[in-house]
Image (cartoon, rainbow, N blue to C red; front, side):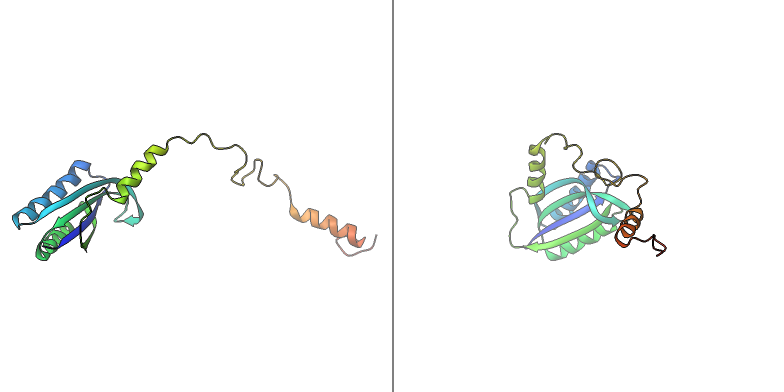
Amino acid sequence: MPLYETVFIARNDVSQQQVEAVADGIAALLETDGGAVKKREYWGLRSLAYRIKKNRKGHYMLLGLDAKPETIKEIERQLGLNEDVMRVLTLRVDEIDEAPSVILSRKGDERERGFRGPKPAGRFESGRGGAGGARRGYDDREEFRARNEREDGRDTDGEAE
């Protein structure tokens, strides 16, 4: 049977156990049709690149499936009908990698990095006052008016002194 990888995103207001229950339902459907779940990874609650159905975060789940194409169509239909699932993507693959996915391995690297120390003070101001910002009450035009008066020897009205 062909191999597939399916990633689905569930709403952020459901619990991890409910997401696991959706994956269990897929596994039960596969087993009745003679397929199997070869890989199962919960990626956690992650931020979305853009809002989907008024949600900014979602629970991600990756499933490596060994199933018939008809069964995959039924799984996608079932996930589409489930109110908790926002998006589904299924790809046919040549082989299912048993090692943890890139998402999970990167998540472990972030935890190992640890605390880097406090930010340096004063160098990276936001531009709103402070050390790097403009002076309060300062008008650039006054400087140019004064410079023009000195160079020409005239007032700003164009009259000679």
